[in-house]
Length: 440
Ligand SMILES: C[S@@+](CC[C@H](N)C(=O)[O-])C[C@H]1O[C@@H](n2cnc3c(N)ncnc32)[C@H](O)[C@@H]1O
Image (cartoon, rainbow, N blue to C red):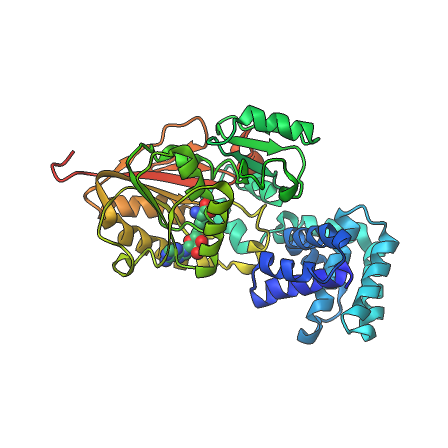
């Protein structure tokens, strides 16, 4: 199959049927030639990133909406527009390849439509792009509800956040400090022709100058390196880990932070890595194995510990909660078509349930770190303000750090350029200490 036809299939599955981008992409990648896989990925991520703008343009070009059964042709047209506007594909080649892909998608009768719509765009390009500037959804390439929520939350920064969400994310690595130093890894990467810069506020972080297939990184298979954004690498340091502690990573899959916790403090008594998704628990095991680390992986619901907890309290709990992922749209552009405004309400309710379920598992004097990769206050500062108001034995520990912004409760990192020089993902962290029985 050609990459354009495969991309149309991926995009329909992801946006119309709500399937996971990474899962569908890996299935379709097996149907295209190995040399075309990078193009398939570029097409899918690019169209998802710019879909609100491309959709706006397409609506101006179609006299009537396409029928449901022609869904893949709609995506093929959006792919054609993307190639013309954002890739270095000559316009005539983009049109010809799109027409050919229509036949491959079993819609040969629509080849004329594909040809006509894309050629019409080339003729009217300047005036149509001018109209985009006047339409907020098209201009910022985000759903209207997302723009409205962001504007309310971050009146000074919303435009910078939207721009950061539309940028390509850097590939960031975490050095396994048990096995190598950051300088040694950086030198080995340079010897392999891969320039990398150290992250300023994250001692284990290296940012690659260009993206590469991670399995080709020197030291990756041997467990010297992992892929993890700098913002996510801050969690282990915030937990104030010490030898002998029992640690619960309550929403652990695929295990990025679990592994970093183990790399940071090898003297921990025990780490329990919990996740409710059995398939994702397998990913935790794979990551532990690659890095030569050990944790107890448990499949269970963090909100109902009676089903899996042995009754021994934890010194540290990390709750990296399921969230809208509104801080990592640059890495997950599928969020733009898959999320809805009311997801914020249901996810905030789920986060509250998880906080309430996990708090009793913490020792007196112990600490819970709450994290999300969201920039929406209802999942972050408002969630934790309500938690502290309702929980008399929880004490807020302000995070003092050179990164992010201090909020009334917790600390927020805004994504990419919106967040400062390290260009990290959008993340929120808040620390809660449990008062011991004697009130300390
Ligand atoms: C943000 S991801 C965690 C990322 C992970 N901490 C890491 O650094 O690699 C959230 C995880 O929460 C899990 N999850 C969702 N609801 C859960 C629940 N009720 N109990 C336990 N895990 C849950 C999801 O399966 C998902 O793997």
